[in-house]
Amino acid sequence: MVDDGQSPGAEFPLVSVIVPAYNVGSYIDRCLASIEAQTYANLEIIVVDDGSSDDTLDRIRLHAAGDARITVLTQENRYAGVARNHGFAHARGEYAAFLDADDFFEPSMIESLVARAIETSADVAICRSNYFDDITEEVKPIDFSLLFVDPAKVYSGRSLRDVMFRFCVGWPWDKLFRSAFVREHDLAFQDLRTTNDAYFVFMALMLADAIAFVDEPLVMHRTNNAASLERTRSKSWANAIKAAIAIGEGLEDRDMYDIFERSYVNWCLNFSLWNLETLEDDARNGLVREMGERLAPKLPLDASRGFYFDERERTAAEILQTDRLGAQCRGLLLASEVAHLKSDVAWLREHTAALNGELAWRDEAIDRLQREKQEVLDSHTYAVGRRVMAVPCAIKDVLSKKESG
Image 1 (cartoon, rainbow, N blue to C red):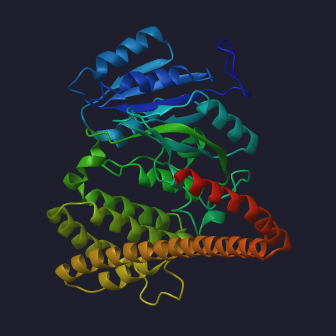
Image 2: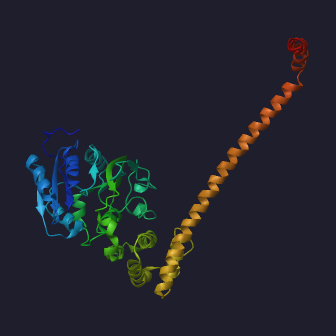
Image 3: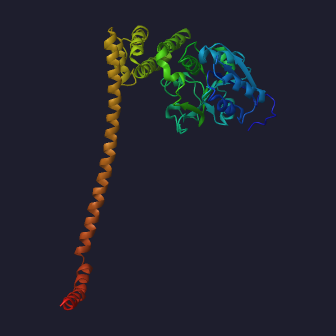
């Protein structure tokens, strides 16, 4: 634990925690309290109010009055990406962390990630995360927050080329970034209503020389929050494609497209299908049109066997290379549904096999018990016992008849 009185230095570098906040009066107190209570004390906390119309700004200022580490910035409503950029422009820390205002950190989050980043000279350090249900307050692990890596090892972005868009999620709040690295590569969040973090996060990961991990869930991500922008993605359905295309352009600008093409194309398809499945009809049609116009040209015409990770992506690619909007929409949804059904069938087969195994074990146990019973019935001891017990049983029957007579 870092002593509260510790002055900045190489051992305990300053960390900037940047929080964009918009109409989160119900959540901001817990968010800021979780940062203020960090076991790592050498922090600056930069909170950017994004034009809130509720009491969010008043609550932020109350926290700032009680903690000199808090800086309050304000802007017109431009959404979280612009707010994070605004906050980072004022950041003095050697490392930067970003936290959404309805989420919160575990007490050791910053300390654990800073220690790991220093130990490994990491450009990015990542931890696991949990879901926190806004209604029930139930906590569940986010199983896909870290996959396909050994958390004890350190990786470069290029070494993760085949799993780049799958080994972690493209959100920033479970990660710690080295500030000089971010500035060196001129990384920024996109000016989008939603999906404004994907470009920043994935470009940072692909450019990183060292990515390190802490194998613990240290962030609580609030879910079932009816007020979150995630619930209203149909209003900004095009942002998913804009983010995906920007990542591809970023790779081309840095001459890295060939390195990450397979992972990138598969992610574009998978991400677009997920958006398509969760949007309303008008937004779906618009998204499919954008996929056909902007994503389809990036699909290889002669993809080698195994280029696509599974049947879902391969089928989606074939459909997108047609021209009819209606066929594309129906085909993509059908392909996605078929993929889900195949997954369900695979699970049922596995479950059935397990039940058959259990039934076979029980049948074997019943057969064994029946054999043991028969062996007892056939044994000499059992026969002698029956003859010995026959006399007292006969006497009992005679006495019973006399009494009744």
